[in-house]
Amino acid sequence: MNQPEPKTYWHRLLGRLFELLFAAMPVSVKVDFNLMSEPPRSDVLLLRYEGVTWTIEQLARLPDGVRDSRAHHILLELKYTESLNKRRIEKAHAYDILYRETAGLSDKEVATFILSSKTPRQSLLDEFGYKPTKWPGVYRSTQPMVERVGLLVLNELRDEPHNAFVKCFASHVTEKQKAFRALMGMGRAILPTSLWMFLVGLRRTMLGKGDEEMRVITPDDVMAIGKQMRDVLLASTPLEERLKGFDSEEVLEVLLRYKPEEVLSRYKPEEVLSRYKPEEVLSLYKPEEVLSRYKPEEVLSRYKPEEVLSRYKPYLEERDHQATLKRVEQTLKLRFKVAEDRLKQFDERLQKLNSATMEQLYEVAIMADSLADFETKLSMLEPADVAEK
Figure (tube, rainbow, N blue to C red):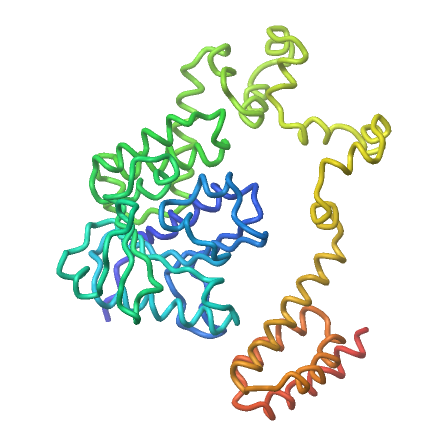
């Protein structure tokens, strides 16, 4: 029996790019996640934001169409090597439904988009009622069955920095080139080191002579290419030029290659410190050494209450526990039409379970054949959990 040929999963490269793009923000990125507790596993990328709304800094990393959505859960399906077709549109619609129902989310909380590298046929757009919006390359359907699935044609998106992160996956070489020029133009002083290296590797992969596209490429391969090219650049550049515009991580790498006095003698103390992030400098001191220099209100005034509370693990564990509890209850309401007063009875029992058992019970709620089946398995889980406490 012939084994299927290995292939490059381009959506995983896009996923790694978004992971690096939102690395320092409260935005989670998931690739190849299960839409349900059991297969099917999708090739959809999930962006999930935990805050109240997307910030200006985060919107600067999201393309047209997506950045206009108020949803906290964004499903992105990238079609890179194949043309958009009827089956892909229908699958995206199915993914949208499965994810909302499984996670117990409303229509407004989830937004789904297809990112098409190749420009779709006009006949296909007409068949599914896709019409241009005010943003070039962003299409919306007028048909009720697929109106929730937005379409981004990467070749047609505007040449704006916030579109460049996805336009580098466009099928037209000229559009890729413009996107990478925009991204590289941001410079290492703006882009984090890891993101810059990944983009360098991605540009080599996407705009190379074609040898990379003849074999399977993983996100780690792309990062390795970027690091190799960065090392070549460092080896051929004088020390003074290397330090210009480098962020703190790159300065630390340079210091490892030279004696400290060779580097530090060229700068004033404030010039050296300006190249480090505040948290990197403060990490060299004990908390009491820093805090003793400030009044408590001077420190706390710089943080939101939720930022302070997030430092405490018990608070996070309780939040996750309550979130899982809500998912279980929503699943019971959705699958078995459980009334509110009945849910309150379950709530008293579920509150006593620990987080690990709650996650297991969530799987039970999805897979149980009936409410009675769910209650039986709940009773089986309770004694061990109570004994553990």
